[in-house]
Image (cartoon, rainbow, N blue to C red; front, side, top):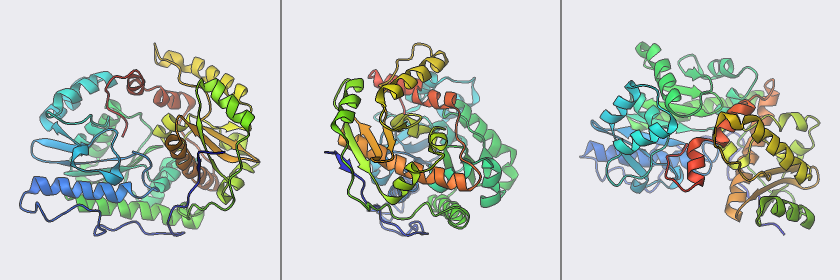
Length: 416
């Protein structure tokens, strides 16, 4: 028995993203007289448009913001863009954010303290990327992990390919871990070209930022660039947005495999299974041991999927390899506590794609992410080869200080 199976996702082979006028349940006219209120309403509208497209964000990813004279209103950590409402916006004092950006380098915990100081009373926890939203000198900033954009950066030709496809008016920033350094480097990259007033930044192995003085302008720019990338991939690799269809009844996960997973996890795990055509083709690849073991397509997915999947059914070997991986990199984060070493993603020639989690919802979220991962890897391979973050960089995200604090029960901003 399985706890979840893959479900279809509506879409066309080469689709168009939702336009600004698509209804989202947000009233854009109620506060027309008050520009600050209208800006927040428009940001909620844009957030829902972006968040309801699984080819842009999945399970809480991405973030959005709008500036007023004194404050930055941004999506708070832990909220989903697709259903975002006013309670999911954090209100931050721009003067205090400016002081943070202009000061000495801040570690993650120092940034957390700075955000706490900058947050208006009653605000939820901010995303770690709030300082980057502040640093970009536009009223509206929108950020997603669009599959098509990530696929371009996850290739041998990476940054050059992004420029070739999207245009040289898009700033491209090499991989930097989210936090203070990313805010500083992205801001510096923009200011180097400030005379051009560029309105888009692509972050390698991460995603897309678009900006505008109006929220609708930032949204339209996002749509323009994502569709340009999707059209290129449809011509040169394969469409990433074909419908996700369950073509066969999913295989049962053998009882002995489930018992092994539960034993190593120290608790009962839920599992989800998918055996659609894309999965069957992927697990049959001769180069599967190479392409599947390079790492996640975009940085924060490692928190849900772990760095690499298990191939086959040898849970003990996977756990041993994971312990070795942890010990190789533990010195990067002194005092770090090893996470549950059992696989979150399993690729097997008979079972297809199996994902695990503490509950069915989590297992299904991991499955959603890895089904998108399969398509991104396949597209990148057709464009010359899949490349992503290094093993050490993936460890830094998986064992991020803020995520470790969250596991220990402390409040901390998150990546999204």
